[in-house]
Image (cartoon, rainbow, N blue to C red):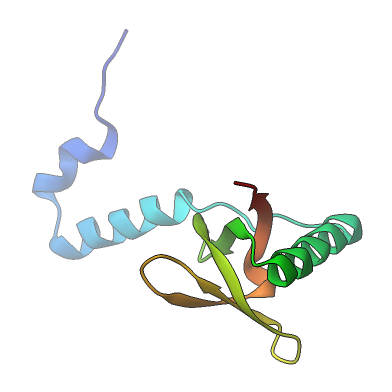
Length: 110
């Protein structure tokens, strides 16, 4: 079995611009496409958001931004229907999240 290091072995012979471009290319390849949510899933997310806000429940939200997914935990402090954003209060700080970036939401019952 051949154990080749691919293009990494050539980086010492490349110009810094080429190395920079290769790193950008590898970063772009690791990006995930935005998940497509159907109407039913959007309705469930909306219902869960309203319930979490009404009962001040702790939630775990997965958001999609710039090709990556991040999971945040906190309480829904504010719902803004006009700008379609929520304010999530975590232990450290307060985050403003566009509703369109939310791909998964789970209410944590304690």
